Length: 175
Image (tube, rainbow, N blue to C red; front, side, top):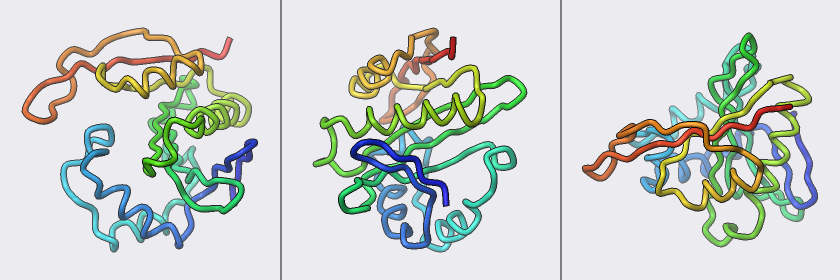
Protein backbone atom coordinates (compact mmCIF):
# COMPACT_ATOMS: atom_id res chain seq x y z
CA UNK A 1 0.00 0.00 0.00
CA UNK A 2 1.32 3.42 -0.97
CA UNK A 3 1.71 5.77 1.99
CA UNK A 4 3.40 9.13 1.83
CA UNK A 5 4.20 10.59 5.22
CA UNK A 6 4.40 14.16 6.43
CA UNK A 7 4.78 15.71 9.85
CA UNK A 8 1.05 15.73 10.66
CA UNK A 9 -0.51 13.90 7.71
CA UNK A 10 -0.22 10.79 5.61
CA UNK A 11 -1.41 10.32 2.05
CA UNK A 12 -2.50 6.76 1.49
CA UNK A 13 -4.07 4.61 -1.18
CA UNK A 14 -7.82 4.04 -1.24
CA UNK A 15 -9.10 1.23 0.96
CA UNK A 16 -12.49 -0.56 0.96
CA UNK A 17 -13.20 1.16 4.30
CA UNK A 18 -13.18 4.52 2.48
CA UNK A 19 -16.49 3.80 0.74
CA UNK A 20 -18.66 5.90 3.09
CA UNK A 21 -16.14 8.75 3.09
CA UNK A 22 -15.98 8.78 -0.73
CA UNK A 23 -19.76 8.51 -0.98
CA UNK A 24 -20.15 11.61 1.19
CA UNK A 25 -17.37 13.49 -0.63
CA UNK A 26 -18.52 12.71 -4.18
CA UNK A 27 -22.15 13.49 -3.38
CA UNK A 28 -21.53 16.87 -1.76
CA UNK A 29 -22.76 19.34 -4.37
CA UNK A 30 -20.45 22.02 -3.02
CA UNK A 31 -17.51 20.11 -4.60
CA UNK A 32 -19.19 19.34 -7.94
CA UNK A 33 -17.96 22.51 -9.61
CA UNK A 34 -14.31 21.60 -9.08
CA UNK A 35 -14.77 17.92 -9.90
CA UNK A 36 -16.91 18.55 -13.00
CA UNK A 37 -19.59 16.29 -11.51
CA UNK A 38 -23.19 16.65 -12.68
CA UNK A 39 -24.98 13.83 -10.88
CA UNK A 40 -24.65 11.77 -7.68
CA UNK A 41 -22.56 8.62 -7.43
CA UNK A 42 -23.97 5.36 -6.09
CA UNK A 43 -22.12 3.24 -3.56
CA UNK A 44 -22.04 0.50 -6.21
CA UNK A 45 -20.10 2.73 -8.63
CA UNK A 46 -17.76 3.97 -5.91
CA UNK A 47 -17.11 0.43 -4.67
CA UNK A 48 -16.08 -0.52 -8.23
CA UNK A 49 -13.86 2.59 -8.39
CA UNK A 50 -12.12 1.60 -5.14
CA UNK A 51 -11.68 -1.98 -6.36
CA UNK A 52 -9.89 -0.67 -9.47
CA UNK A 53 -7.88 2.02 -7.69
CA UNK A 54 -4.89 -0.32 -7.50
CA UNK A 55 -4.18 0.38 -11.17
CA UNK A 56 -0.83 2.02 -11.80
CA UNK A 57 -0.75 5.76 -12.59
CA UNK A 58 0.99 4.90 -15.88
CA UNK A 59 -2.07 2.84 -16.87
CA UNK A 60 -4.89 4.85 -15.28
CA UNK A 61 -3.33 8.30 -15.87
CA UNK A 62 -4.55 9.30 -12.42
CA UNK A 63 -3.89 8.64 -8.75
CA UNK A 64 -6.24 9.47 -5.89
CA UNK A 65 -4.85 9.45 -2.38
CA UNK A 66 -6.72 9.87 0.88
CA UNK A 67 -5.44 12.55 3.26
CA UNK A 68 -5.40 11.27 6.84
CA UNK A 69 -4.14 12.75 10.08
CA UNK A 70 -1.23 10.86 11.66
CA UNK A 71 -2.82 10.77 15.09
CA UNK A 72 -6.08 9.00 14.18
CA UNK A 73 -5.88 7.77 10.54
CA UNK A 74 -9.28 9.36 9.82
CA UNK A 75 -9.81 10.69 6.28
CA UNK A 76 -10.11 14.47 6.03
CA UNK A 77 -9.81 14.86 2.27
CA UNK A 78 -8.36 13.68 -1.03
CA UNK A 79 -5.56 14.72 -3.30
CA UNK A 80 -5.57 13.68 -6.93
CA UNK A 81 -3.00 13.54 -9.66
CA UNK A 82 -4.79 13.49 -13.01
CA UNK A 83 -4.14 13.60 -16.75
CA UNK A 84 -0.67 12.18 -16.18
CA UNK A 85 1.43 12.54 -19.32
CA UNK A 86 4.78 10.74 -18.87
CA UNK A 87 5.91 11.66 -22.41
CA UNK A 88 5.48 15.37 -21.68
CA UNK A 89 6.42 14.96 -18.00
CA UNK A 90 3.37 16.73 -16.57
CA UNK A 91 0.47 15.97 -14.28
CA UNK A 92 -2.50 17.91 -12.93
CA UNK A 93 -3.16 18.15 -9.22
CA UNK A 94 -6.36 18.78 -7.28
CA UNK A 95 -7.09 18.75 -3.59
CA UNK A 96 -10.11 18.93 -1.34
CA UNK A 97 -10.27 19.03 2.44
CA UNK A 98 -13.83 17.86 2.94
CA UNK A 99 -14.09 18.31 6.69
CA UNK A 100 -14.81 21.99 7.37
CA UNK A 101 -13.19 21.87 10.82
CA UNK A 102 -9.93 20.68 9.20
CA UNK A 103 -9.60 23.67 6.84
CA UNK A 104 -7.44 26.73 7.37
CA UNK A 105 -4.89 24.92 9.53
CA UNK A 106 -2.16 23.88 7.11
CA UNK A 107 -3.41 20.41 6.16
CA UNK A 108 -3.91 21.22 2.48
CA UNK A 109 -0.48 22.85 2.31
CA UNK A 110 1.23 19.85 3.88
CA UNK A 111 -0.62 17.39 1.62
CA UNK A 112 0.27 19.46 -1.45
CA UNK A 113 3.94 19.59 -0.44
CA UNK A 114 4.00 15.80 -0.02
CA UNK A 115 2.44 15.19 -3.45
CA UNK A 116 4.76 17.73 -5.13
CA UNK A 117 7.77 15.89 -3.72
CA UNK A 118 6.32 12.54 -4.83
CA UNK A 119 5.56 13.78 -8.36
CA UNK A 120 9.00 15.31 -8.90
CA UNK A 121 11.02 12.50 -7.33
CA UNK A 122 9.03 9.33 -8.16
CA UNK A 123 7.15 10.25 -11.33
CA UNK A 124 9.98 12.41 -12.69
CA UNK A 125 7.56 15.07 -13.92
CA UNK A 126 8.81 18.43 -15.11
CA UNK A 127 5.67 20.24 -14.02
CA UNK A 128 2.47 20.09 -12.04
CA UNK A 129 -0.53 22.24 -12.87
CA UNK A 130 -3.80 23.16 -11.21
CA UNK A 131 -7.01 24.50 -12.74
CA UNK A 132 -8.68 26.94 -10.33
CA UNK A 133 -11.72 29.16 -10.80
CA UNK A 134 -10.89 32.80 -10.27
CA UNK A 135 -13.26 33.07 -7.30
CA UNK A 136 -11.65 30.17 -5.38
CA UNK A 137 -9.48 32.39 -3.19
CA UNK A 138 -8.50 29.63 -0.75
CA UNK A 139 -7.11 27.41 -3.53
CA UNK A 140 -5.33 30.30 -5.22
CA UNK A 141 -3.66 31.21 -1.91
CA UNK A 142 -2.72 27.54 -1.29
CA UNK A 143 -1.12 26.99 -4.68
CA UNK A 144 0.69 30.34 -4.64
CA UNK A 145 2.09 29.44 -1.21
CA UNK A 146 3.49 26.29 -2.85
CA UNK A 147 5.19 28.40 -5.57
CA UNK A 148 2.70 27.69 -8.36
CA UNK A 149 2.56 30.60 -10.80
CA UNK A 150 -0.45 31.90 -12.71
CA UNK A 151 0.30 31.21 -16.38
CA UNK A 152 -3.03 31.58 -18.13
CA UNK A 153 -6.75 32.17 -17.96
CA UNK A 154 -9.45 30.21 -19.73
CA UNK A 155 -12.33 32.65 -20.28
CA UNK A 156 -15.89 31.50 -19.45
CA UNK A 157 -14.54 27.96 -18.94
CA UNK A 158 -16.77 26.75 -16.12
CA UNK A 159 -20.55 27.01 -16.18
CA UNK A 160 -21.98 26.85 -12.66
CA UNK A 161 -25.00 28.35 -10.94
CA UNK A 162 -26.30 29.73 -14.25
CA UNK A 163 -23.19 31.77 -15.00
CA UNK A 164 -19.80 31.36 -16.60
CA UNK A 165 -16.56 31.60 -14.64
CA UNK A 166 -12.99 32.03 -15.75
CA UNK A 167 -10.59 29.25 -14.84
CA UNK A 168 -6.94 30.02 -14.16
CA UNK A 169 -4.09 27.63 -14.75
CA UNK A 170 -1.31 27.59 -12.19
CA UNK A 171 1.93 25.75 -12.91
CA UNK A 172 4.89 24.63 -10.86
CA UNK A 173 7.94 23.90 -13.01
CA UNK A 174 10.66 21.69 -11.58
CA UNK A 175 13.72 23.81 -12.34
